[in-house]
Image (tube, rainbow, N blue to C red):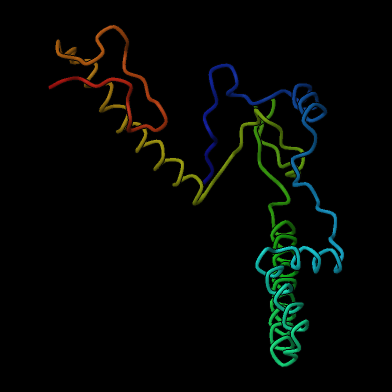
Length: 187
């Protein structure tokens, strides 16, 4: 079972192919930017640029200057191990991001010119009406119900027209979240 995201009036049929082509030319493809691979020596230098590592390298220099070679070796080993672990974690993180990018949806169902079409995800543009199904449909339905109930509570309070409203000159309007209002009725 599929359901489409409801669009504002006049856009229920979705974008026209001409408008979608214009927006695609204007905004570019719907793809994540590929990151240039970072060289190993750049990763190592970035790790060594950490302030704590710089303090440890200073400690190595001081312990060598006073002739305490065993302590200098231990501190240097800590720096080497820390740098190795940090570079390895960066490489694994980059590999994970690349794998997630490869797993992204290769296609999307959109409504254009009143018909549902299966398009490459890179061709989806701002304003397209996406056709969703399954878990997405249930999630959207839940969000719509929560929003309706929350907004309905505020609108019902406004409709009562309580004379003790905190802001009688302006209607209630949502601010940063659905549950916070610029003004509320004084009960």
